Length: 80
Image 1 (cartoon, rainbow, N blue to C red):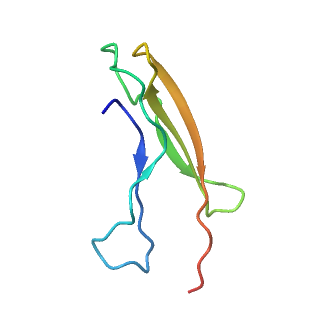
Image 2 (image 1 turned 120 degrees about the vertical axis):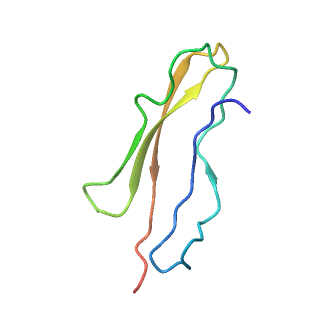
């Protein structure tokens, strides 16, 4: 498997120590060319609704160079 971003999460109401299923955000297309990875990766809660998550992640293209994936992860509000 080539460098490929994934995420998982848990809600406060989920059982302690358990995570939701892994979500694939993208698939790497080739081996890396040996440079550093992840320097510009990160995630942040959406400032407009304080619920959704935005994540920026590195991924390898078919030449082994870095590409970027930007994903909005919708997190619907749940009733308490």
